[in-house]
Amino acid sequence: MKMRIQIPANLVRKPIVSDIVLKTNVLINLEKVNIEANKADMVVDVKDRWEDVKKAFEERGISVDLLKEPIKRRLDRCVMCGICSTICPVGVFKISDDWEVQIDSSKCIICKNCINLCPTEALSVDY
Image (cartoon, rainbow, N blue to C red; front, side, top):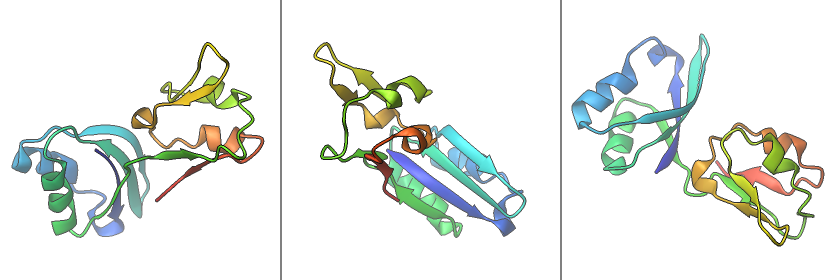
């Protein structure tokens, strides 16, 4: 399960993720991390017992959003131009044999490159 984790300023300098991995005995894959002086924003992927990991973050006062479908496409706006497939760093978008853009949102790290370049504003994130 992918999650967006928002760590507040008072916890940014603490080894929160390491502590949660040790206490839950669950591996956490950091897919995207943005750490600033006053906050940290992460996208993580947890394969097993994600409920335990979510609870552990929340018990420490950390906001967690589940990302069941990180990237969304409005088919009524998409013209299948394929620009998203050229800019995506993790291969979320693929062009099929019949020239249709296929999406595997489980790979999405919410970099927003595709959203910023989509000429018809067909793509969005939902959190």
